[in-house]
Length: 302
Ligand code: HEC
Ligand code: HEC
Image 1 (cartoon, helix red, strand yellow):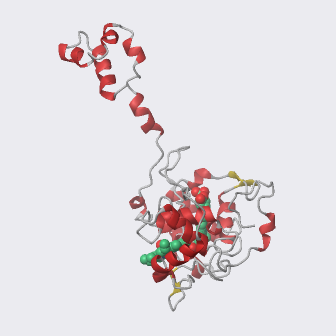
Image 2 (image 1 turned 45 degrees about the vertical axis):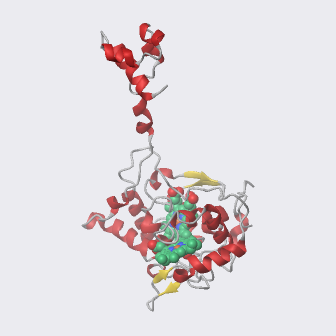
Image 3 (image 1 turned 135 degrees about the horizontal axis):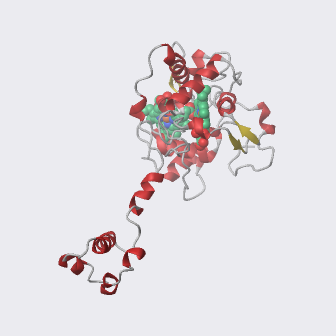
């Protein structure tokens, strides 16, 4: 039933007597306008508003442009700084040349780049890879050990508390229990199997100018990451989410080339990801403990 027809039916039913022109409007269904039962068949008046009430919270990156000031904002600001300059601020714990923000773009405020907005509500949760319920510090340590090729932070350590404080601040305006739109790296379904040779060629034309012809990234003289490594000893290890084909494909499709997310076709993103994820990168010694219950995803590396 068309929306205007429903409206006309409701109007006709609610306003007595219905003006002549409205009656004419619903002329296509004369029997209904004549019956008092008609409004019962029509959707209730609040029905169109219902999807909006359940609609997920939409991230507005601009809302996080100004970090909280003063002593009470100190830990939040520290968490933000750690996210932006991770390997230089945590040299003992991070084993590669990456920063959290290289993947969690704009320090976890970018939709479709695994944003941290609302993440305090998404944990604790069961995760198949660990085979147990992980809390937020466990999840952060997952990225420390894999994406950062480093070591776990003690849960009561200052950096861990700073990360959690920052993520809590990012999540403060998400109503309790409400889903957030575009979290994670939403999966795409490329039409066919990846073609790595095509991926290599595409990498050279679309990615190498920033990430380097060898894909090993570009670092400033003070070792700040200018363009993060996709490949090699200073990149993430084989146990990282980004080493999985579906995740890397989705990240590249939505976010790369930088500031031109969505410009590659699904298949191009798939081809490029299938090329770079299988190049040299660090191993993960404890990988044998992953998916202890056997429910391994199809794109797992081991
Ligand atoms: C090489 C890329 C990469 C880097 C670097 C990285 N992560 Fe992640 N992170 C991921 C991926 C991929 C996921 C899973 C996204 C998904 O759910 O699809 C993830 C998920 C997370 C989540 C859970 C998000 C959610 O909504 O469930 C948290 C929290 C997190 N990372 C924290 C960090 C922190 C803190 C750092 C820096 C110490 C970091 N990550 C560095 C790739 C990365
Ligand atoms: C204009 C420069 C530029 C181009 C072109 C570009 N990237 Fe990036 N890429 C970046 C920057 C900068 C980051 C880190 C973003 C940040 O820290 O804010 C990044 C992050 C990434 C990451 C996550 C971090 C990591 O090291 O794994 C991947 C994966 C990635 N790019 C893949 C690609 C692919 C594939 C292409 C080609 C389709 C591409 N990029 C093209 C600049 C670029």
